[in-house]
Amino acid sequence: MLDIKYIRENKEKLLETAKNKGIDLDINKLLEIDKKRVEALQQVEELQAEKNKLNGKIQKASAKERDEVLKSGKDIKEKLFKAEQNYKELKRQFDALMVLVPIIPSDDTPIGKNDKDNKEIAKWGNIPQFDFKPKTHIEIGSDLDILDVERGAKVAGYRGYYVKNEGVSLMMGFMMYAIDKMIQKGYAPMIVPTLVKEFALFGSGYFKGLNYNPEIDEIYEVATPDKKSDGTKSKEKKFLVGTAEPSLLAYYSGETLNENQLPIKLCGYSQCYRSEIGSYGKDTKGIYRVHEFMKVEQVVIAPADVKLSEKLQEEMIDISKEMHEELGLPCRQIIICTGDLSAGKYRQYDLEAWLPGLERWGETGSASIFFDWQARRLNVKYTDKDGKKKHAYMLNNTALPSPRIFIAILENYQQKDGSVKIPEVLQKYMGGVKEIKRKK
Image (cartoon, rainbow, N blue to C red; front, side):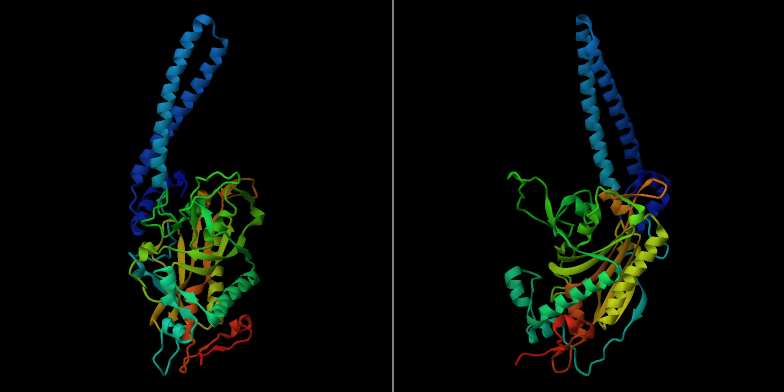
């Protein structure tokens, strides 16, 4: 969400941005409604002041004057009620349009319509050359008895899966490796709530509009009502997070920090849940695209400084690169084009690892700058050195996601005899095990 003054001053640029990001937004209508909203609020305030003045007159009025003052008070009350209703409706329309206004992207963000227009900007590591036909992670996992998608589907339904035996040690091993790496790099670790209130998801931008829409928002709403401490049913909606990002960013919601606390660097480990409503028919086999998984996420809460945010984003993506390199995974870096960039993002980098069995690149990381777009929704501010209050800037990055790194390791480290070697950096997390062998 942007400041309305900024929108007024940058109308033409924002119209161009909305077009390039593929967002259906009528900024002229937004500004027209804003004008009416401001006028309606002024009317409410004037009528409220008049009502207060009449309340004071009632106290001093004589018996003869009292009836006339009461009649005037009744008229004002009716006008105030209508004015308040008018203001509420204009405010609702205003808010619904405001949440669609996009951040103007960075100068180096490519103009494009969809993910086909994303640009590769770096590549490293050697794609393995096999003297045998490489298997997919599904075949490898089944042969080694470390992955079962058939029984996963039986128990959990479409996109369900079980990780088993040494597969568990491997997956939990690189999760712990990622957490250790984050701590070494100065990111404070957290295990975060995965069941959260609505504001955390709206605030971080996981609703496309003002409210949750199950047809387009890839979020699970929990149907069972919660209970308050006194035993009564809570009317608050609860949702499962698709990443630790909303929980980490909402940690400071409604708070004003001091500039000397910034930047705040956090990492969160969590189970993640995604409905994948917009990915129907994509990646239907295996565990590349699933409904639940584990992930280590980075976020930074920074002062309102564009250059510093860009530097922090480079730092975050460099940490992910370092982990991919230490894991020995061939990888490339992508800069996301305007048509594939969500409303709140200034710039986004993705990392993609090569998946030999699937014979393609697969996303294994994503780093984004949001500036104050999320902070305004979550009301996270800081006091600068001059004593002025400003909204913070926010950034996020996927450190490591469990299923896709699991796929990448199995497919890149597979051997002709059916075994899978363990990357050296992970062996200490697996009790020194150097390979996963076929069961006899």
